[in-house]
Amino acid sequence: MDLGLKDRRALVTAASKGLGRACAEGLVAEGARVFISSRDPERTGREIGAAGWLASDLSSEDGPERTAGEAARVLGGLDIVIVNAGGPPPGTFQSTDLPAWEAGFQLTLMSAIRLVKATLPLLRQSEQGRIVFITSISVRQPIPNIVISNAMRAAVTGLAKTLSRELAPDRITVNCVAPDAILTDRIRHLAGGDEENVRRMAERTPMRRLGTPEEFAAACVFLCSRQAAYISGQTLGVDGGSTLGVH
Image (tube, helix red, strand yellow):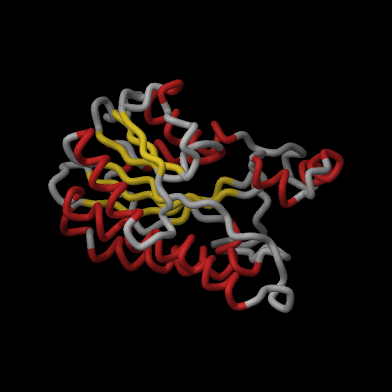
């Protein structure tokens, strides 16, 4: 199937590793021209064929605008924006102090708002505008011990749903991809770096295994495609069937 992504111009944030990296690789494989950003200045994207990169902290006030501007300069515009950010630190409500809430607010929610505001004028010029937010299955089924992520990812999902209606006349689709039990460094961190804990996590899934970043990226890439032009305002769970809810 031709996904219609050849030469489409895509910005993927937090793409030095994990899910963001996999999404960038998936878009490159489909012929898209991809610009990546991350806080890691050593991961330039050359090894995956990215057209450009920028070391940028999206939780800063000027980071998203600077990233969008550099991506547009290198690519000559934008058709696709994959909005991604590293996860806030784990913790319960009672163990989480107010500065940690503020940092999580800037990292997860405000970075998304600023990035969309910075890229929207460019996406409006595209004939195939796509915004995809990488969130978490916690927006449907909160996960213990990651209270900041549970709250902020839900806020991003509300933002995405609102944007999907506002931007529909501009032919810009807005969707979320919500992972769970995908084997990344984040999962290893939440498992305390213990491979036995990772194995137990896999055994608790219906498929008795963890998903791969490439499997997650395939869903993200499809939502960026020409075929997904009438899919908007949705949250697609990529969780191996682990979520108990029906919505």
